[in-house]
Length: 190
Image 1 (tube, rainbow, N blue to C red):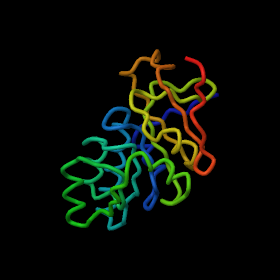
Image 2: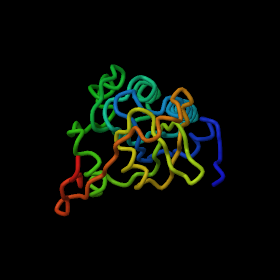
Image 3: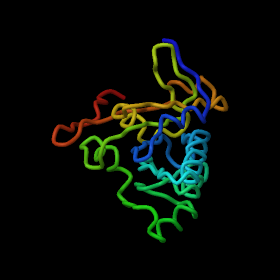
C-alpha cells in the first residue's frame, strides 16, 4: 500500500466546519499533538475572514493543551464529550461557548456505534507506524481509536516517531459486541 504523507496544514484541509471529529488517545497519551494545532490555525484564519469554523469533538478522555487547549483558544469547538480537564476549554464551557456532554468514558464508544451522537466525519489518530497493509499501530494511549477509525469517513494518521515501532503487539484491543449481543471476552485459557 502506498501511503500519502502530507503536512499538518494539509491534513487540516480535510477537516471542515461542522465536522464531527474523533481523536485517539486517553489523556495526553496517544492523542495527536500537531494536527490539532493546524486545525486551530485554520479556524483562526476562517474567523478572520468572517467565516464560521467549529467542530464537534469526541475523545477517549481528557487530552491536554495540544488538543483541547489550542482548539478552545481558537474558538474551534462547537461540541465536546466526554471528559475534559483543560482550563481554557473549561472557561469556554462555563461561558456557554461550547456545548458539552459529560458522559461516562466507558459509554462513549458504544454510544457512537449506536449512532446516538451523530456520524464521525474524521478520525485523527496518533500512531507509531502504519504498516504496508494499512494496519495502524497506536502509540501508548488507544482510547476510542478502533471505533472512530471504523466509523469515520476520513482518517488522518499523525505519525509520532518518538514512539518505537516495536510498540506493535503491546496493545490489548478488544471491541465487544454491542448489547443486546454482547458476550464475555473469549479468554478461556490462562
